[in-house]
Image (cartoon, rainbow, N blue to C red; front, side, top):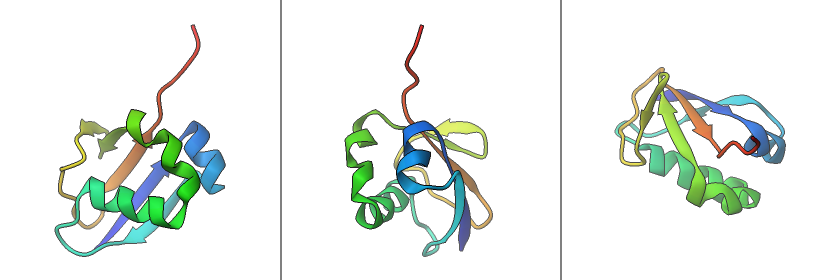
Length: 81
């Protein structure tokens, strides 16, 4: 199955892209996608603890199962005030 991954802020800077498509095994979860990303891009590790995840524009957990055609957004915390 194929999902679209959207990246924001520091994650986008670290990976050098705002979005990409990734092939995953059927039944993969957000966590499994994240694990793949960390293996390919170790520079993302400092952001992992504070990430939020959205699936098709709705917040989800790491255990959420992905489906073909889904859009997954990795959202780092936003600073400022």
